[in-house]
Length: 204
Length: 204
DNA sequence: TGGGCTTTGTACCGATCAGTCGGTACCGTT
DNA sequence: AACGGTACCGACTGATCGGTACAAAGCCCA
Image (cartoon, rainbow over all chains, first blue to last red; front, top):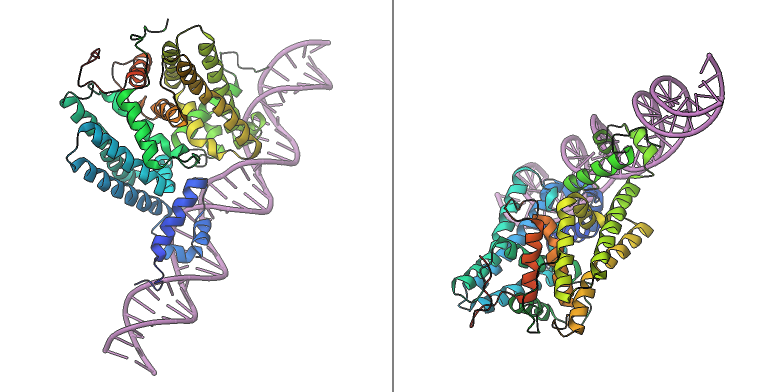
């Protein structure tokens, strides 16, 4: 029963500012006093709401990945062609990054700061999310629409989309997250080759 | 004039172990005592060799990016087709990651820990390296071999290759770095689409 | 043997770290 | 008025942080 009824509980405010500061300064470079101050609390008050600093990072990351995973699963449950599914998944991914860039950055950059069972659980969650991409590519290959995607290709595609969190914010163009997702999806589906030049021999 | 003539100076040993520890634990989570101990030195002795902890991170990163940049430039100076140049650049990139995974991880993950002019200088160096990929794609488009690569595509391709540092070590398959680079290059050039008319089938 | 330089270890600095504690103000319920 | 729970504060702990001062020890050349 939080006293604050202006639309955001103290818990939510703490998670929000923690994501912002962790993304900007890094987990280990951020002190709990700084986290509290950003949330309008002293250290003692902050520890009324969180169990530990690492738990804060864990809760923040877990909630984010779980929500993204849920949305991704909904996309895969749709009755679409593999190519359309890949496009829809890419759009969902880019929308998430556009809307929650701080959290994405924290999950990707600071996950290694988690220890023990928390690290294991979050790694498992992240693997589950990444499997969504593998699943779409597998479906496409099964139907003969895509070339068989070995693990390298899956990780390559995944990396392309994951890396967008680094530059999406700086991309101050007229392109919407959906536009960018479409452009990257086209690249994965069609490649860059435009001339009928045959396959390239390996470099010496 | 290092006393150690067994092939590695104290300076080099410090840079090497620092890369390893920074990559494993993170810059801010690593204490200077820990760095010294890993190099066989006490804190005071360590500070005879380094100016500061941040300077150690900077020197380590700068040296690495400069060397990678030099190799990349040599690739681009070769007289090759755009596709062959992209393949050669990808191979060079993957070879670097395979040989110096710790340094790559540190540069990518801990660069934001640098401040002031050091951050600016390293960012400029990294941008210069990333421009190599943009340059290859631009050449290809200029010659009509590649589709025009806008900034999104360049960043997408770059992300795909940069992200490999996350999983290349875990990839305990029979694939060499060159194999992986070739596979990713093929993806960028040809895409995954194979239907309705199966193009040149990729070897499974 | 004796300077002179490089390298190292020890002791120390002030600051900050994550986390805990006792105490207090406010709340609705009884 | 008394109570239990929620929310918060400020002070405190012991440890560790990055960095420095300084002297001893190892080394080379004379």
